[in-house]
Image (cartoon, rainbow, N blue to C red; front, side, top):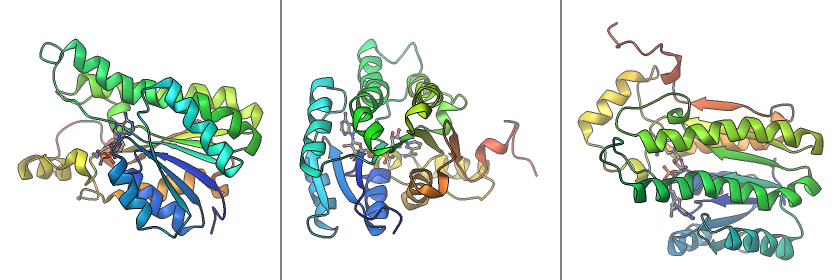
Length: 251
Ligand code: NAD
């Protein structure tokens, strides 16, 4: 019960890794806020958790005024914020000559702006609670992928935001880390054809695509007191994918 009565705000808490994180933190005693623009999904997750220990909150993280109001509302309701899991994100694939300016505005507004707004407006409360942030970056922020130039750019921004924010926040006792998953079985990855999934497995030393719960357990570790001397780290949760130098898997 590492998070007994901690207030844990999880963006994108209605699906995928955010949902798995909600279940994990809740199972360790937390009160979770499921901050998602798909409010029905967030409500469903909340209904599956212990009564009065989960609050579904409709939010578009790319709206700074709404994010500020949300953090203030949460602090007003519970008196504090202990952990921000900055996880909401979208994927728009494409090469630069195909993907539009509108695509860039949309993906950057969620994956970069949203992450910054949530951190900025949660920070005053995290300073008070000596809390922490776990961002969901990606292995796509540690290196490039073919045909995903905007996505990789946004996740690269989250990776360096994690480092720079950690430097500034240590003096206040606030830790900032990220998880960097490879392909995970969520809605975001649901449309990948079987042949593509096989290619992913081939690049992962552990030879399989992880479940969302296997990322959520690492988020919980990074947010817990067990990780109290870890900050500024972008931790791959990728079954060994980034252990490779990038050459083909022949052996
Ligand atoms: P998902 O689509 O299953 O869930 C994402 C959730 O975020 C959804 O509930 C969605 O409604 C919410 N969301 C999206 N935009 C939002 C916004 N503007 N405001 C509020 N909520 C919003 O996806 P997932 O795979 O669980 O993704 C979670 C995070 O993990 C994302 O940041 C994603 O980039 C990252 N990631 C995913 C993979 C993967 O293979 N699935 C790999 C690495 C990193």
